[in-house]
Amino acid sequence: MTVHFPFQNSYSALPDSFFARVAPTPVAAPRLIKLNRPLAVQLGLDPDLLETPEGAEILAGKTVPDGADPIAMAYAGHQFGQFVPQLGDGRAILLGEVIDRDGVRRDIQLKGSGPTPFSRRGDGRAALGPVLREYIVSEAMYALGIPTTRSLAAVVTGEHVIRETALPGAVLTRVASSHIRVGTFQFFAVRRDTDAIRRLADHVIARHYPELSGTERPYHALLAGVVARQAELVARWLLVGFIHGVMNTDNSSISGETIDYGPCAFMDAYNPAQVFSSIDEMGRYAYANQPRIALWNLTRLAECLLPLFGEEQDKAVEQAQELLGVFPETFSKAYQAGLRKKVGLFTERDGDEALIQDLLDAMAKNQADFTLTFRRLGDAAGDPAADDARAEFMDPAAFDEWARRWRGRLAAEPQSAAERQTAMNAVNPIFIPRNHRVEAVIQAAVNDDNYAPFEELVTVLAKPFEDQPDYAAYADPPLPDQRVLQTFCGT
Image (tube, rainbow, N blue to C red; front, side, top):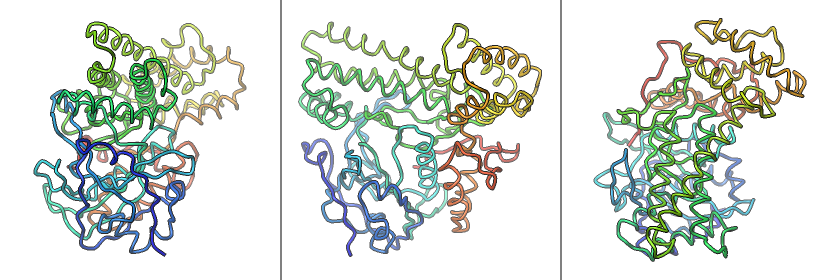
């Protein structure tokens, strides 16, 4: 049988200015190293056929499947605050769209599939390390319940790419609700192409916000919808200690998914100013800055939509500011609600926010591990004698002082200790893609063609909230000589 993709191609039906038609560049000897079989089934694809040599050729871009309409999408973007009027998919090609088993339209894109008209002198290829990183972290985010693009497959190409040295080449097959970004709107706004902005906005509403169709002010409602989704998304990032690392407007998805896992990382010790990205020299995208940057990006989107708000410029600006003004409250509400759950508070009382902030301050001062502190709070909630959480603090007395007030607050909650512990463990993961683990997996694959560590890590991260005694070591923070202090984009 032949591998079949039931493609529908709504984006490539838009005007030619939205994209460039370009086929993937064939590679020498594609070899499948990982197929996400459950995701393949969800997409209506046959995983057995995708694991054949024919399937590997499709997933590497060597063969274009029937029904595909390969395109590289056009977009612009602010990169570290500096506007670039033309970026676009420089190493990614959208094969097409499928309707999954839930009736959701999903993009299928090859990342690392060769140069496009947007490559800007780049080779259009991807190295194996960044492909494995995106596969690991995107699927971990999915398991954590955070909206995200996903990874269908990783393929090595049988070729090398040149970065600082020669590295094995690879292609990631990425799945997304769409790849439309704030930068996509900016591409047309800088060209003063209001018709294209309207066409793009109508497409986004039909695809991502269909409930807005036919409303009196659909473009205002679109901005409000994107603001809400981004506020809630970034709150979820902070609740698991995730740092995107490169929150440029071209990496800000209109659908509200996490997209473009470049120099991303999860914190070990809690530090609001934590930066891992090697290119973020000024800390623009530090952990605690992410809400502010999200609003900055959304403001750029609002600027693009102003021509659709009406002919009166001042009134349009005022309306946009009002819609953007909702972001802080929406973010804070989602973030504080998540924090209350993480510390076992399921009712809301005055003083809760200050109590939780005191914990975070003590964690920062004592270099407490973010993930393990919250996970072990669940143990302490279930058993007052459990003291694993205090062991995360350099000065355990700092935890003891906070825990005394915390237990007093818990006494006002209606749950039993067992119920509270179960609820806390359901929101506090024990396993995250710790940077040193991800790096070890990459080194085994790149240096030794050994994918057993990759497979094991992916298996563990698929169940982040479950105690897995056989893999308990994966919960451990790095030893001093294992710490990864910088992550890299990979381009």
